[in-house]
Image (cartoon, rainbow, N blue to C red; front, side, top):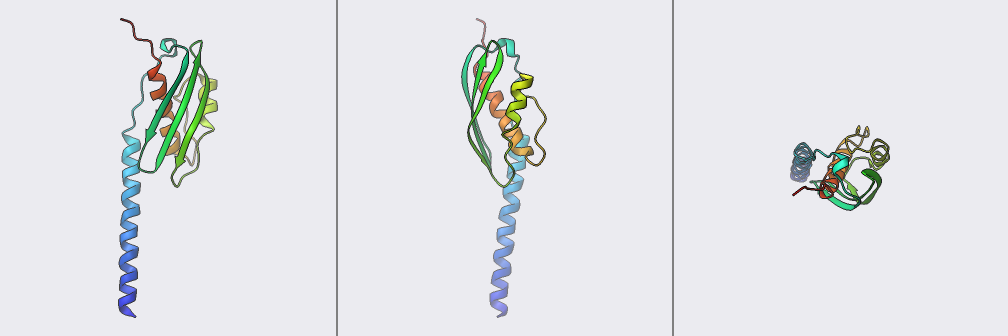
Length: 130
């Protein structure tokens, strides 16, 4: 009986360590997200894709720009790990014509990853002179 309890305790400790490591890695991934400094007047009309993957969260978006304004942000994929979804922030992005908006409470990591994916997509539409 003691042997079984020790085995169960060992498994619980190992699983706990794995979960702890996953959350630590996720936090590190979010801290290392990149955001482009986008001036919407430099973004040409079109639809651009952004894709960000972290340990627990994956986001793929299509961002449509018309007349230097965010016309639509379509979330093609959002695997949000253990947190809450944050898709509603795209409405605020469109209203403010900027991806730099407040995160959704309870979905901070998903919000940041969506913002980074939108930033990445917009960067693809920046007109480069020369």
